[in-house]
Image (tube, rainbow, N blue to C red):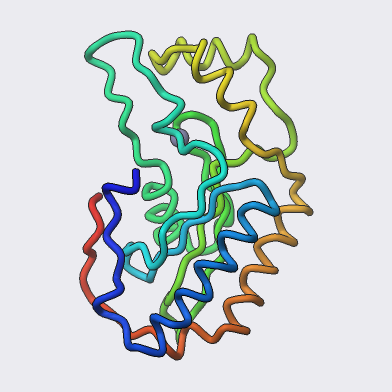
Length: 190
Ligand SMILES: [Zn+2]
């Protein structure tokens, strides 16, 4: 996953880069505290920091059982794109039935930053039978998937809301929106 990343360091002012380093540190600490992965994007889908990773991402859990099945679904990027298209939605459910939450930071009426938290589970954890049936539908190996998703953290709706509000406050406190310049083009891979 990290090999796919394009970080925007070169496009960011000196002060902004310093703030992004602070954010990276806080993002890593928060990720370890809530036991969920956190990714930070600018408004057009560039990674601004290295994703904080405490569990796998979907692609780490998915092994196809047939050669024609493509496992490389970049669910984090799909989550970002979903949140950009559906402004008011806070949760995205990926094809693996894992969830991603977001909080957005605005600059005027435009989205300056999107924080994506996930993959996570909300409310309940699927039992083994449900998980295996879902893997069969997707054409992926249930031994790996149903074992590895035990690492995925489970949130209540209220707990998740507290986490997303906290990240928004943290962003405002760091005032990243004032120190990171806008960049017009989408540079990450789709
Ligand atoms: Zn997924």
